[in-house]
Length: 362
Image 1 (tube, rainbow, N blue to C red):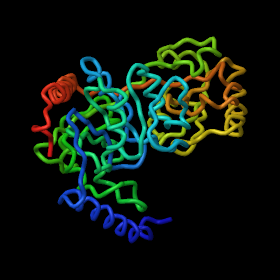
Image 2 (cartoon, rainbow, N blue to C red):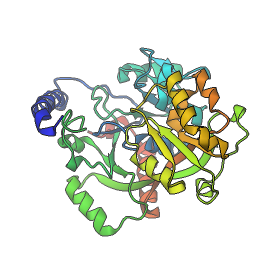
Image 3 (tube, rainbow, N blue to C red):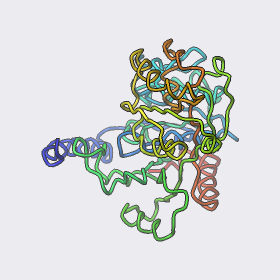
Image 4 (tube, helix red, strand yellow):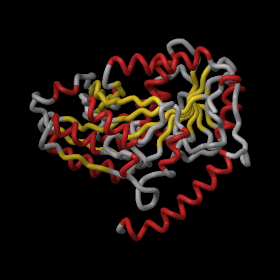
C-alpha cells in the first residue's frame, strides 16, 4: 500500500500519541519513580535499532560495580504478568530478547511484566539487593519516570527520514526524542568522518543538553547454537571468509540488512532466508531450512543465524535436525572512537554512583 494512502491513519495515530504524551507531560497522568537508578533504553523506530546490544553493553558496564537487574515487557511471550527468569525459562515464557540476556548473564535478575511500575516493585521485593534497574524497550512506557533515558537511533533508518505508523515505522512523533537524555546512534559504519557526524546530528535536531554517541556492531564469534549436539567450537567469523566452507543463513529480526550484508562478506554466494521479526519457528520452517542447507552440509559448510533466533529455536525439537552444523553470530556494540567510549562510560557510571532521588532527571 502506498505511503500517501496511509498518511491519514498516521495523522490519527500521531494525534493519539501526542494526546497521551500531553497527559504525562502536564501531570494529568502520574509516572511512578523509585529510589534507585532506573535507566530506560528504547527507540522511536519499530524493530531492529540495535537496542539489545546497547542493553548488554550497559549490563557489563554497570554490573562491574553494582547489582543490576533487567525488566522487559517480554514481547511476543505467551505468558502474562510478572515472570522472573530461571533455568527453565523459554522464549515462550519471557520472550526471545530477555531469554538471550538471561542466558548471557545468568547471575543477573531478568524479569518481564507489561506494567513496568508493578514489575519494578515485584523485582525489588524478590531481589532487594538490586542497586540499579535497566528498563528494556521502555521509551514509550510513560508510567515509570526513569532516572536516565537512552534512545537508540538506527544510522541506516534515521528518524528524520521516517514517518509515523502505519505510513512509516515511527512509534511516535520525532518530538518525542526530546525526552531522551542520551542518544546512541547505532549500526554506524565503523569509520565515520567528522563531517558525517555533524551532518547527522544537525538533521537529528538534538538539543544541546542531549549527548549523542555513535556506535557500530562488531561480530565477535561464530558459536555453535547447540554445543551439546555439535562438534563445532567457537571461531572468528573472518576465518570463514577464506576457508571455502559454504554458508546458508536465516534470521527473523526487525532489520536484517546488516546481518545479510555481513553473511555475504563471508560467502558472496550464501543464500539467506528471512522471516518476520520475532518469528516463532515451526517444524515446517526447520524443514525448509534443512532442505535449503543440504548442499551446504554436504560440502562441510555451516548454517548461520542470530543469537536471538537461537533463543526461539531452543525449545523446538525439530531444530535437532540441523543442530550439528547450526551456529549463531555473536555480536556486540562498540563505540566508533575510544573517546566516545570513555565519555559514555563515565556518564553512565557517574549517574549510577551519584544517584539520589533529589537529583532525578525531569
